[in-house]
Amino acid sequence: MKTIGLIGGMSWESTVTYYQVINEVIKEKLGGFHSAKILLYSVDFHEIEAAMAENDWERGTEILIDAAERLERGGADFIVICTNTWHKAAEQIREKVTIPVLHVAELIADELKERGLNTAALLGTRYTMEQNFYRNKLEEYGIKVMIPDEEERDDINRIIFEELCLGTISADSKERYLRIIDQLMQRGAEGIVLGCTEIGLLIQQGDTKAPLLDTAVIHARRAALYSIQTSL
Image (cartoon, rainbow, N blue to C red; front, top):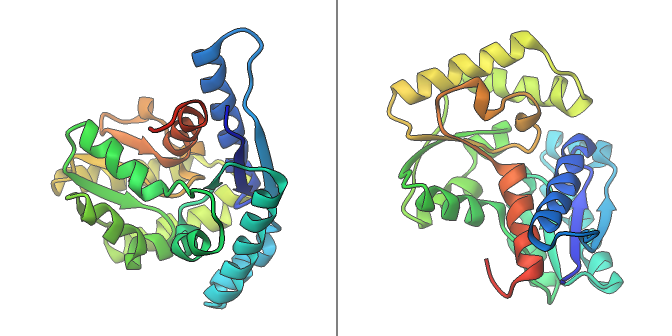
């Protein structure tokens, strides 16, 4: 079994999902008392959020590179960045470590193709929805990417940072997300990528008929499988 290096704390609420899902998959696959071999470096999200708010991506990237290097020195066999937005720094992190970094967008693209979904709507932080680092990765795999309109993006981003990252789950916010998802499906989306690891805390598949791809769950599950196999 490979040792998984998690860069977490962005936010810690969704990092809990990674830890739980990874261990559930290991138990499912290996049985008995098996659990995952995990090293977790949990950053101070206050510093990371401040870097985003100030558009200081270089500083945020430095923090995550340091975390990845510490995990590699600690014995991790590969890295999982437990957030979607900070995959903006994934290529720089890959350049600084000698172990693999499992890119969430690459794994989500694989999942979309396996499900036969070629047009996906992307929900996430404003950075993830509006910048190209995530969308381009999906498009490289032949996925057509849609994003919500500006007002919807404002609400999605606000709910993430003002509620979900602080552990607040609101019925009104859930309803707002579901209305946005319905609109995107009417516009031609075949599936909905929950491209922020906190969104799965608010919306689950049982809430909508739209096919949902919970990036935290998929990323964690595939990391667990990678830890016990030579490939995904």
